[in-house]
Length: 356
Image (tube, rainbow, N blue to C red; front, side):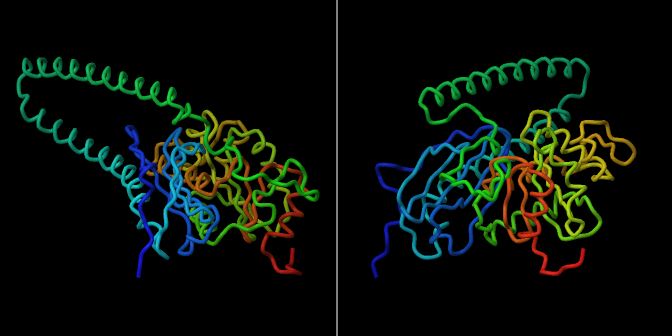
């Protein structure tokens, strides 16, 4: 039996990417039947200021590579059933990102070994002084070289039009498709899919984020998830309404950090013993007290903050706050208390006649 060609077109080979810098956080999305999807993200790589995604367009049988919502490369491919992620083009892109992260880890290990060897060799004050001066000279030369390479790369990328200047990802990115307004939903609250629920895979991403980074604001109730930034004006507007919503429901905050200064606040909240009070202080703009006080330097805080941002981006959300019900329905924005209660009553996942 003849097999389809699984290579990208010769006229549009996979690009070679410059990925020097900090390591990436990776999230893989899409189910087993993803080949039949019209337009879905397969894989996301995130680090501060950068969001890279591989999209699959089932209608066109096309892979796309995007940087901060800008398409850098696209090519038609024809995978065998169930083997979309085995395509050479897909693997070539993914391997560049994972190879860059592994190289950074290997470099750190090399520096550690070099430092240990240096300490073993330096055993007199005079030798230590000479070695210190040599290290300072080499360090200054290295920093100058890195700065020069970075400036040249940015100038080349911007002049070619391939890589736009770094943007505030996850909040201002335009929607992929035009969205028709719904008369029954107020302008300040727009459903991302106008009624379509998140897929099972996307709901698993939400559940993982809520389990690892979620802050449950009430002791009991049917949960719904809010992706919220402590420096987002609409999030600040929504916060006091959450304490007044239908008591059958419990808000679970997943703190994200896209605004200036939000990352340190989020890490402080995640490190606090009393995360509920710490979150209320952070988004309310006042200083925490008691068990809500922390320095944000606990183990795993930075990783959790990045994972929360990565989940937000992988779900293709475009604004904060974003609310996700237990049935997978999505609303972005603040809205009135009545609007939120009506949305929860219709989409919150409680059976008819549930007791208040």
